Picture 1 (cartoon, rainbow, N blue to C red):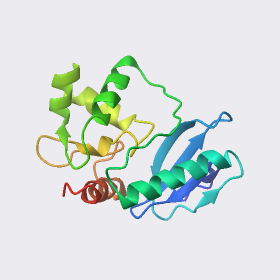
Picture 2 (tube, rainbow, N blue to C red):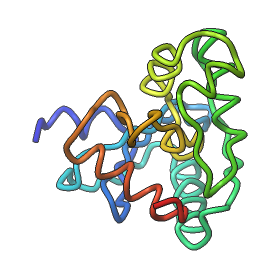
Picture 3 (cartoon, helix red, strand yellow):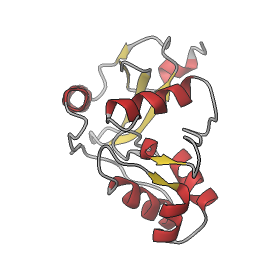
Length: 163
């Protein structure tokens, strides 16, 4: 484990499938979430404790009810295409999936561009890019095609009743 990982996050929280790195700014907005390997040490920083408490409560509610709707302050970023892709992904109902091709037909662009937007998603789980799959199979996840990240995607889809 690279020790700089722990210093890059405001907190590292535990999920059943992995760890979730949380980044936030001084104003209390989430700036990014990142899936981390399951053996990443937990981190509880004193920076932005209210933000961390809010995300912990939201994650607990989502673990109890996969249909839970996150309402957290997000520091939005991304290109106009990424924003369109992330908005379309956010409209995929819990328990359903869409293909990269279906989303690209809805918002323009190509399936590959949708996949790249998924990989650049700064707020996984909140913007549920795990609900976007290949025409045949799961496709990739968080810029990975196998390993613990793909297992994380499987877990997320099982949690939502898709698999």
